[in-house]
Length: 362
Ligand SMILES: NC(=O)c1ccc[n+]([C@@H]2O[C@H](COP(=O)([O-])OP(=O)(O)OC[C@H]3O[C@@H](n4cnc5c(N)ncnc54)[C@H](OP(=O)(O)O)[C@@H]3O)[C@@H](O)[C@H]2O)c1
Image (cartoon, rainbow, N blue to C red):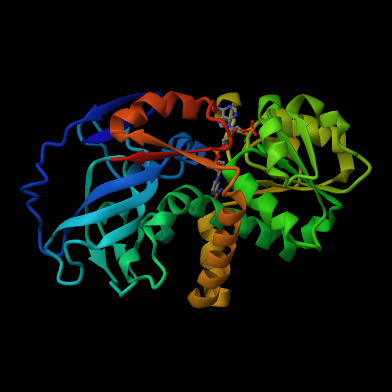
């Protein structure tokens, strides 16, 4: 069974039964079959659909039946190996990684080590390497299923938060005295807010969010100042400012840049949570800016620091950030792909409360 969305109107969705039966998986030599256990669902997944054509996200997991018009949105989650024709990966292995919202998936493990492998399925070979990597979690010394929900919901997003903080401080905060974070209630923003709050050298932090999200963010206590989108003119325009944008909202970026004038030193364009307002990646009104793509930053740091240092730094950060959010965040478990069908439109429309973490349990 696979959850699919219509490519040119991804709020529309359907469930498609697979023609292949998992009890008779018909594996070629080297293949494994996994059964999905659970995955998280946030605006990040909706952005995969927004950028499905442009960035190749539809290519990871081709839709069964009419893949020209229907696409599969990738998700981060856990799966268990239920059949194996691979000499290296046994039945019973448990994996963390990039999956389709589906009951089952075939993978072709390569470069297998005790802790991870890379899927070498032909149709994924040209896609960014980080998405094809699977962690074999049972081999991790401290693996605990109690952390699964935080790991699928927060780790992929907070890895980006860490990279953004790393970029900002490497660039000496673009000479700014304040950071303005747009779509401040997103989990990626909250991870960055945590990193900035923990960094004594950082400039002051202003979070901008929808008015109805402000009370929840106030309780979180990570932003020094919180403002609604309608109150951009209250930002001190005498201070040099770097903008980190998770919203992709061209009108907000244009208004903010007009207000800040020459004090807007740089804009890092990260997300598209406000995808309904029109994608702003090519908006000339923004001035000095760059589009940030976490997998590229990760590859660069892996080369510069080596995998061991990179994994240690990022894991320490992600565990600490998850710990910080523990009392504020509550997980909401949805029942199977039918549960996902019920919540999909609300996630597309940004109607999920910021302190709610959606987990689809199969
Ligand atoms: N470039 C990269 O490498 C990279 C890596 C990771 C994540 N990202 C991006 O970062 C963004 C945040 O992802 P996330 O998973 O952290 O988000 P999330 O936690 O699901 O964020 C939810 C928040 O996003 C805003 N939102 C979502 N949908 C909306 C809609 N239709 N209309 C208006 N507001 C909406 C609302 O915040 P406000 O009211 O505060 O605006 C909402 O509270 C995504 O676009 C994601 O793709 C980029």
